[in-house]
Image 1 (cartoon, rainbow, N blue to C red):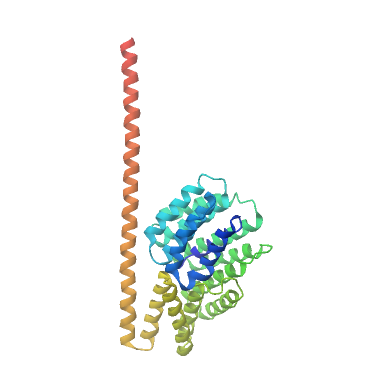
Image 2 (cartoon, rainbow, N blue to C red; image 1 turned 90 degrees about the horizontal axis):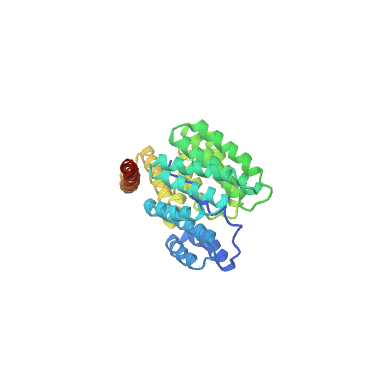
Length: 346
């Protein structure tokens, strides 16, 4: 499942900056530029880095940059950037930032096919999350965490387990006293429940949760986010399975428009695959071939990216192993020198 919780990163770490200029630009990037002008949003994160007043703001900005890179399918670059942010927060005692940034690293790694690095980051996020002292922030993080756990379950085909994680996430989000982002989080959670029910071929249940997610997103402060596209796509697939091809097409076209406007790689992939299924169902061979080719092109790009990321990890492991061997040889040499000196003195 390529869809991700990355967007939740910037809805979870907004309450610590006291830099008005930084906050204003950050807000503009996430709410205005990102949904419709992703290239400008990416450029703006560079300026954001120049006006930071402390390390946490820098880490937060890097996290946003990593999210945008990941959204555009540049996963290797995104992972490198989020690792920079991780190096910064690892030296602090801000457990909220540690939790969110490791959660973001988990998402990027999971989507890139390196599950072992993803789960390593996820465990760090869980550990940091247990130390968040603010109840509301802790509840929000725990809700986000259940979404990430749900993705891992979906990837393993454990759809009922995934739904259980998401229902627990709803409990955590509803436990937050007051927060302007909660409606967005609930919309994302219900969208994912709908996605799981589609996988289980329970179309009526899927349709119910997608509709619920749609209404919640409309009431949230992120009503223009690319989450709309994932909801429209789910509704389109549900309508198609119910035999309402006219409503299916309207929703799928809405999805494609959002995907191409936002340049959201994962949403494009979901959109192309949904159109493949749609045109196969109505026996439109020409359009079926057209979207099959577009989907295949993205799949090849993803395979290349995954190969690059795997190679990078192997190089890192080799360098680490070489470093450990060097330390071992130095220690062994020192040990033999000590023995030799002791033998000579005797």
